[in-house]
Image 1 (tube, helix red, strand yellow):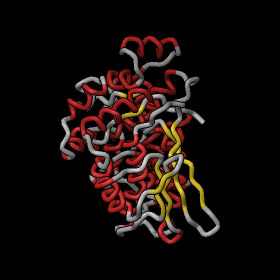
Image 2: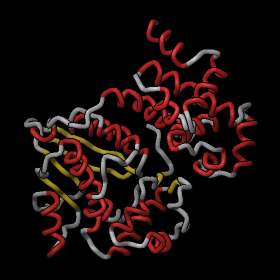
Image 3: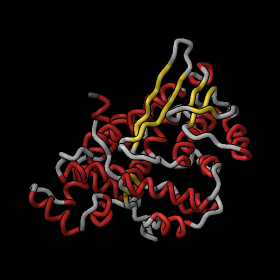
Length: 336
């Protein structure tokens, strides 16, 4: 399976850290990262930088239990495609299946899931790079996130059945961990969290199969197109899927996400017989057709998802691409 090589900290980390009592600039400097990382540039971190960031968080917080505070601040309003796909699931079992497939898009890791004969679901993160000293805070945050996800989606005060970490907290920290997870943490060679069969199958109140149908093809495409052998045009299309809903699909931001200059990106696209304007128009047209065919989203909502400032701009562009109105295409697609 393709491996994502950079990971974006684009979920409002500046606000998250401030709310947790930390200074974002101090964390970034300790990690040797640019001061403007949280300025909205969408700069991706490689695996080494990702781990350095979490080690810097540990140093700045100076509190073993700080990952629990961070995770408790995650809400359903956070728009991240893999997280949103998980919330759209019917239950935790399905959510973990989806996250297991797409987690590597947002972190240098994959998920191992197992279900025993009694229906107990166990989830364990496995990091993609062979490195020593995986930050304990990162391991804790991952396990805490799964429980937070389940609580958010069901609106129930669910407790974990079992939690395992390769390094156990002690003293006050141990009590904080037990209070959050609802059970004392046990020692294990690798981090893992288990949920009862009842909780794993508890219906999600956030279930939305229609929205999943929107995001799943794009997530799948991102996995395949971020392979090292992908062409520059394929990599651009994959990045555009993330930038378009945020209205940030410029050649400058795309080049930055791909770790190259604007001029280098233009040159590579020219060598492949492509250009950025053609790619972004093609991506928008394909997504528009997908939304029109598979959803009941309004023209306003589609315009927003495609990065247009208003519906009229979307309508004019769609007419230029297809010679038809969105309503005409939606009607013909449904008839077929």
